[in-house]
Amino acid sequence: MATSINGTLLRLADKYYISYGSPEQKKIDASVENIKTNLKSYFGVDLIKIVEFGSYKRDTILPREFDPHSDVDLMLVFNHPNMLLSPGTYRTRLIKFANSKYQRSEVYKDSPTVVLELGHIKYDLVPAYEETYQLSGFNTNTYIPSSDSAWQRTDPTGFNQQLIAANTRSNSNIKKVVRLLKAWNAKVGYPLSSYYLEQLIANIYCLYCTNLQDWFFQAIEQLQIAIFGNATATARIQSLKANADRVKTALTQNNETVALNWLSHILPM
Image (cartoon, rainbow, N blue to C red):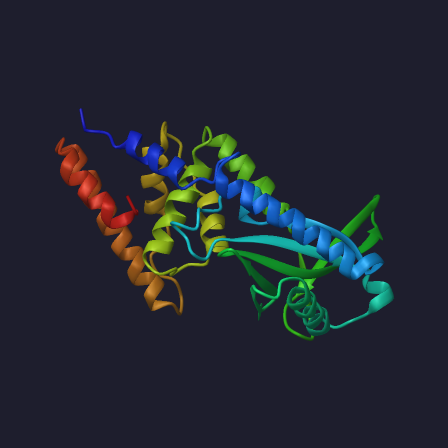
């Protein structure tokens, strides 16, 4: 019977998790509440609501120790029909807000967001507006900037439901795989965007996977090798697949030491 590294992968997936009640989680939540309070005070009735979305809400954000680019996304829904501002103007106002309320912090524009960095935690402030229309009931479209002069439609929570469904089908393993491969992505210099990587993993199909180890290797196997126009990503994925094959070969030879050594080429241990 082949040696297993399932326990190691479970331990690492837990290590890459910002658990509820942890010091990092408490710090993030306190900062989010502070930012919300200051935003509401600064913008008043012009700001309709603030929506938390992204990897922090999906439980797939990594601790900063393993991903220095980890951030918390806040969508700021403005009263656009009354204001009718361009995306660039909204973001200019957000920069003024951040500079006035957080003078000792780093603030910069990063399309389509304004990034506020507090205590080495990044908060992406995304201006947005909503339009409600009637089609078999009342429905709402949400728009965020695509540039300083144009808007694009988005579904800020739609992927959350897709990921929850995939995680349920995988007996709660898909979110663990997401965290594992996001740790790999950060380790090798971010060849893929975190959101794109999550989308790829959410679509992984495995009929006979029974544990995290099965899902982990299946996800790597199903990753597209060639990323069009991105030679770096292609090379990193090819290297990932080669190292995963070396781990599996060592496992079939019941050599856990060698398997763990090759695993350390994939994941920060």
